Length: 371
Image (cartoon, rainbow, N blue to C red; front, side, top):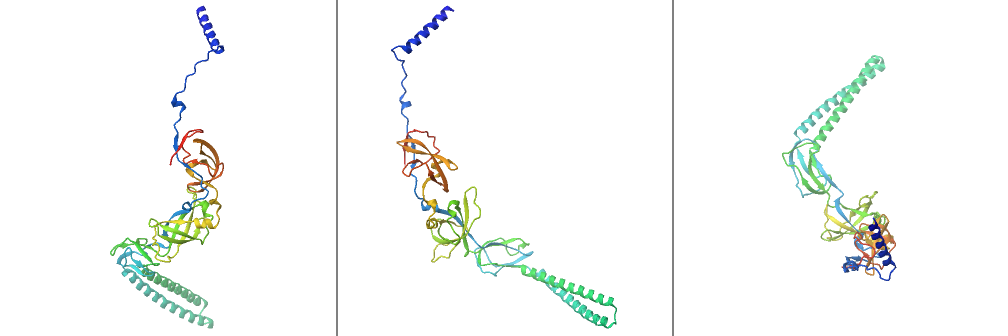
């Protein structure tokens, strides 16, 4: 026990001598790897003061304002198919014909039934007129007149029923002939001569190639600058052939995922040979002239690519390149177009910003800007 106390006392004395004496404790030197930090290679961008026209374009697709799937309206065997896919047809042109043998027999039967019903109605009419004269003179009782009136109404109803049956039979004959409802091009042919079809069986696809429109999703920040009736320029992909379109309608809702509004624009007739548009083609509509003519405020400010800002809502931060080091800068932003945000507060126009805000950087991290 005494030995342990002596050893502890010696240790305390040595510590006290080290703290109060003239000799300083030896501090280990940091290694070169700990002092020199290897710069992180980054790309840097300067905020743009105006949006380029390329970001004011919307990619859309061409579709026909008139497109239909033509189906059989009656049951029967196709006896004639007059057109094929790719053929140009006119409104009212006969495209296909079904066998009408049974339908025509039904028409003849209905016509004969109508003739009999008309004859019966004529007889009932004459009987009623004669009975009324006799009843008025007192030669016949009132019951006889009532009976004649009932017979007339029955004959009249039977004549009307026969006329309706004849109309139905004649309509069946007309349904056996399939005609084009509008001018256009046959896009598909699903049945051939000899095939049996029933009501609803698709036979042809028909598209009006002269009446086209473009459907394009436009960013919500830009759509307010677009008005119905505005003429915009477009290009066909991938040829780049130009065309013009007039805005026909603006969507009433905003897509929650893409934050865009559907715009429909009617393709205007080409002044010269121009672009040959087809339904289903991809095109680009250029709204830069529309936005510029309205002096859109969305075009003024400081703009950065979305990837350069780490933001949730309007609050976020960027990494500014300051004297070769990273400096975190809190900013306030607002989304203006897909892929771009406008910096409302916290950044100057001449400052350089790291292009990718998701990099694992810290304040003071050494940076090396690369192209």
